[in-house]
Length: 232
Image 1 (cartoon, rainbow, N blue to C red):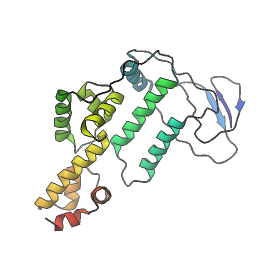
Image 2: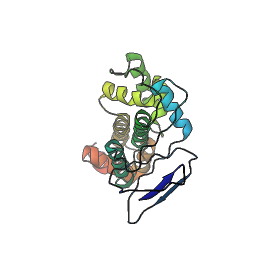
Image 3: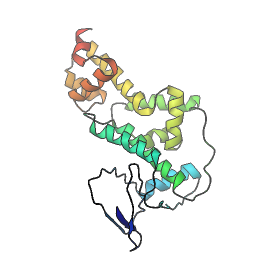
Image 4: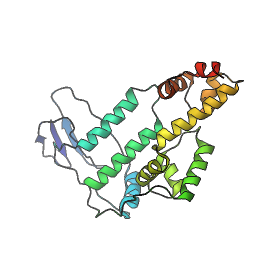
């Protein structure tokens, strides 16, 4: 690899698998490579990073400090692989899961590539009884539409990262998996009740189309919507 970041000085180095390059917004950069490579590019707006920093470090400012070229980051590599799998191996990616991965990556950047001081105390427990009830009621009313981690976190009054941890500890599943189970349970109810086509059931349950419902139900329950309907 030949690259420059923030200056005209070009660096040459071996780009090992798992190498991370952090490029702050509005920074002049140059990059060239001599052979085929695969890269996962995650773009976070300065506003979203500042919002994460406010919750993570209780500060309204932060500055990214890019690591030296060639830096290997195993955590970033794991997140990139998870993103690739979700975005390329599924008929319809779980948007809440993708949002969760991007949020975790943003927190990772803040903790390891900024100098904004020590983070606030970590939450070790789950959601409070009141927050758990509020979040459950919100999901019961909104499970069929597109939801983001930030929206769910706002309902609980926590930062996005702390919300994921607390939600998982409270409900036994991360938000995206809980949401899938909630949608499948509603789809089962409609299928066994009858009167609607499978495509209509998919739409009302929050799935993008009939194929998405079929693939998801087959994966989690080893049954197709048609089999579910015939068993009622």
